[in-house]
Image (cartoon, rainbow, N blue to C red; front, side, top):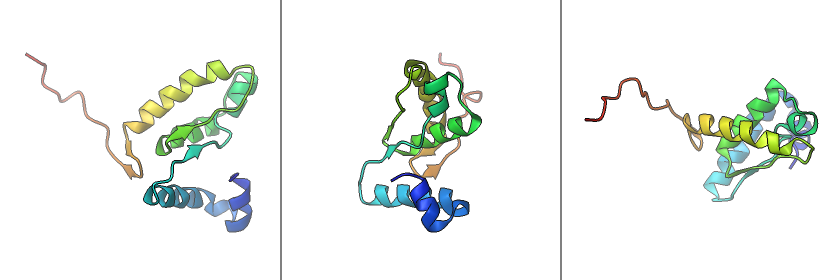
Length: 110
């Protein structure tokens, strides 16, 4: 379902809340989620992404799969997407935000 569809139904001010609830319902029902919200669309089409697109990409860490659009720069979009997802996953366990592991406090291995 496109974001515009629920945006019309529930209002754009509640859109992110609706997205969260859909993710929760899918997880509870053991349904895989494909995150495809124009992820890095400007990056793959024109070579430069907006800040909002990077936020959308990071939120994809809550899904099982993230889909990029077609475009001449799709190969260049994979690396920042993977980097953003890896960083976001350190702070999430699906729907439960978590603190990332503090590495500065680790004792050196003997």
